[in-house]
Image (cartoon, rainbow, N blue to C red; front, side, top):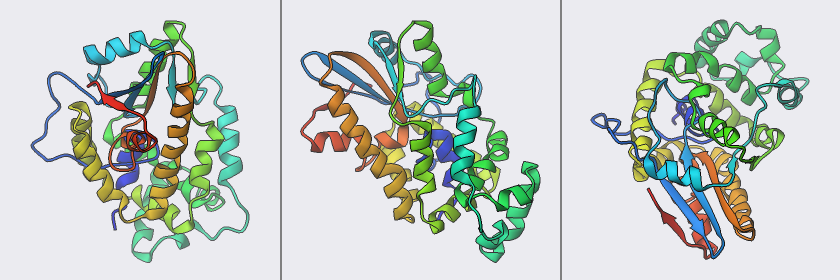
Length: 298
């Protein structure tokens, strides 16, 4: 069973994941992350797979992507967290994350993982008593900070943050596919064994996760969707609950939204985690099953 997908996965696409590319892979001199479009007579919807956190100075904008962004009259992302006023998000998180009568956190993981979990808790500087009151999925999210720090990836360098800044500066509207609460509820509704898998994923070696993330970044930057899908499928194969709740269900929701959006004229860019646009359960595959044509433009 693989547990180490959460750090690289959330850095890459928020809720889903994929593993690394071959060791010899390198970030290309000319980045070409995958881009698709769905269009009818008077509507064009660009689909761009993103990575939510990136190292400093990562080059990912190509001329084709630049033109698509310029052409688009609006941007739609997975969810919008108001960084200028994070209190509502924090309140929603804590309302969903805490429950009475939970067992102590260390008792929720296998015995051979308890020492590693205790170490991770100490590094987080969060009071163990506070974590004991939190549901397991929320603890997993709370313990990711040190792992992301070791990976040297940053949210303010992520694709969505850069795209939102660009569209905002141009006076173009920015929308979301899910509210903050809707997105958090996908975690909250996971069965406990799947939540434990998330938590165990935070305990993996930062060096190993960094190596896998670097491979994934290389695959994404060169637009190798097949490599993304292969690794993603391998990671998710051991957890049908995670796959159903965090991938398939959300992709189906977004597919319906895109189909409905074709009823409005204009051009919009939809930017979601790259794992949602790779493999047999991708948004594109679901759109095609509904009779819509999806064309890869980069």
